Amino acid sequence: MKQRKLGQTGPQVGAVGYGAMSFTDFYGPTTDAQSARVLDACVDLGVTHIDTANAYGMGRSETVIGDWLKQRGGPSPFTIATKVGITRDPGQRFNNSPEHLQQALDASLSRLGVEAIDLYYVHRRDTRFEIEEVTEALAGFVKAGKVKAIGYSEISPSSLRRAHAVHPIAAVQSEYSLSTRAPDLGLIQTCAAIGASLVAFSPVGRSLLTDHPYQAGDVEALPWMKANPRFNEPNLSANLAYNAKFRALAADLGVAAASLAIAWVLHRGEHVLAIPGTRSVAHLAELTAGAELELTAKICAGIEEVLPVGWAHGDRYGDSQWVGPERYC
Image (cartoon, rainbow, N blue to C red; front, top):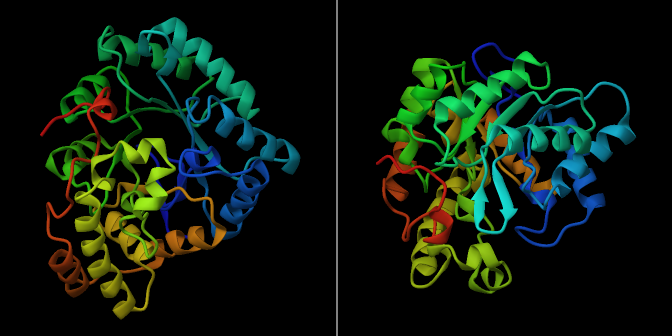
């Protein structure tokens, strides 16, 4: 697996990591045993960066990882990132108070069974607190030895610069793929300027950049997807038509569509990493194969021809899903 630095001072991790939201039933039913098999496959495939959050399955994802580490024994093969800030408190979707961050951190450490979190993100901004105040709280966790590095998810370049002025920000997590290219308009550049990694989640467009995209029947069984504009008609049919063109291009190159999509993300900069998620070991192999693809100018031009900038029909989030992420373009 190709290696890249996670943050200004490391560690080196596989360019393709794993997004452990798939250890919950968010994208379809799964079992803890199935998730354990995926973690086994991560080790075999050279995936060393695991990303989770306390909100994934209300702690289930972290618990699955912690149980797997305990059963395996010995030093962890993973650099583990987790996130905080989304709550289920009535009337308060996000909480960035120092007290909440501390309580949530201790709970995550307990579920994961580790002494320190390698990378601790604020999952969503709570506008009651200035980002400088939140960053100071995170920096305190680093000083206390409970966190090794800090980051933010779904923030704007301007917020990133403000936070970095308080304490080094190791990484920013953002949706980034051939179907969601907003980070090209300032976020990738700002991350590079301050030495932060851009960690791309949903790098295969929630299936729209794979050989097996969700169909209308699949979406009906997934509440979050059902509320997403890109997976509702007439947008879904239009997006599937573009998917067919991309699949054909990948097939002509002799690779899986998911591999090509991952390769494109990694090609955007040496500071860019991808964290796709899947419940399938076979699909995980397709995803990680993207780290080994070298894209020529001709291949990139072919990708741009079948998926021109702005091709995706529908917004990446519905109205309720847009609450929390910072828009900046």
